[in-house]
Image (cartoon, rainbow, N blue to C red):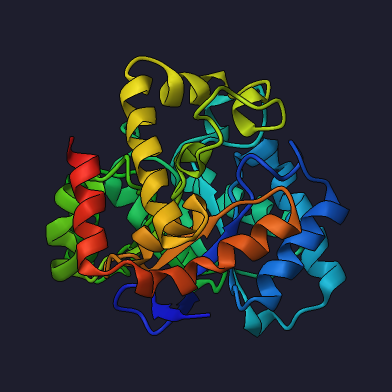
Length: 324
């Protein structure tokens, strides 16, 4: 396993990490989740990603139970949660968002679900236009001062909003956001590569990438339709299916098929090539992988071996396919 600093911090995070989105509770219960997490940990993964909104909090309960059963030393792994969406299907106004009240209470609730004393990373899962950025920055700073959170960051915030959070922190001598969790893959590049570009140098922004395989599209398994056991066939994820395979999907699939030819020439699975492609970007701190079986975890971890195969010539060929 390769380890990278998370932004300008001294925190070493595994280049490949493991997340609970979609699979935990929806596809995996404790026993199956344990097999996946153990496979990841044994491969050197030290970062496990979660959020209050994943499966209405059940994903955190499952992860917490696995961590308890495994008995790993707490100083050997990193755990995250995210705040914004809340965990209750039906909510009152104070049970979601980035107000000081919800940020504080959501942190306590996440710790209880995961049976932990503190969170290593705590993300603002989306920007909250109804809460002043100053209030959220102060709330996160306070959680760090209380020892409940070690580092805080954002997820799917605009570069402008992240910059504003840094300006507030600088003005009041508070701890600024360290990392952003954006979507980044071969088919979703603009925000990560262009919009966030100045932030890497200005603030040393760390990144924890989600959806590196475009929810499976970049594995090639949707080239000929939607398999019954895939996440796009799950109830409640129609929005994801529409986003990936709705209008303009044929153009995406055409690119995926051409990328598959490159992977075949390299003699590697397409998923491993897609993961390796994200790892080539020096502004990527860690790539969050997901899996419903331990064998998938083991296969994903081999992406590190594919990185050297992505020479300048191969990267140029991939870029040419993606630019068509």
